Image (tube, rainbow, N blue to C red):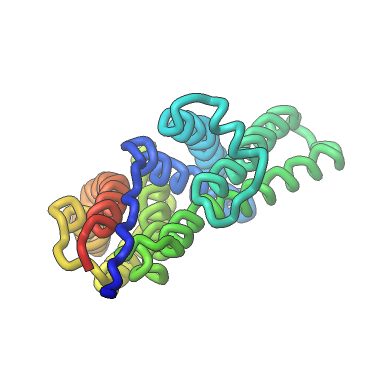
Length: 271
């Protein structure tokens, strides 16, 4: 008897999920940048603004997940049991820790007077930053890893590439957002330049895309090639930095949409 392949169930996620992947990635990366900037102690306003962006993302991300799930009780239900194989479960648990950590870092810093903070206050701030750093890194990387671990053909074929793509686009978007609100630190430019270069290389290594959608092609250009070229022109054309930032943010958002759609199309294609 001839074997018939069991059709895969395509992902049924709505627009809130790619939005969450994008917002959560920026929030996580911003938390990492905040810790790095704070440790360097050269630009306290950069660290402060990065923390606030991380907090904004930590507040918006659960709302996006709840909207996709339909009601708040379903989000809370996911916190009853931790499922390592479920992107939603990992995301819910990570957000449940990330949000309070970033909030605590901001609130306890507000208690610090002009003088030296008490030892216990310093310890709480350090612990909050450490937890925010770890969970922020998870927010940035886990979605690419878990999408690649699914049975969706195009995601599975790019299991090694997706974490790099998502991490690079999150880094480029977060650094660009900080630039667009007024920060001109050369480190942000370097981070964004590196992210764009990684996007280009990772994009060239994607597999299983028999036909790239217009959204996928646009995302690859806007998140990788365009900002890379523009940032190389910054020394001779200053506005290129702003244009590169806008391109990276738009491309990062479009990338999440394109990869979710690619997964949906891949699941319905006949082998």
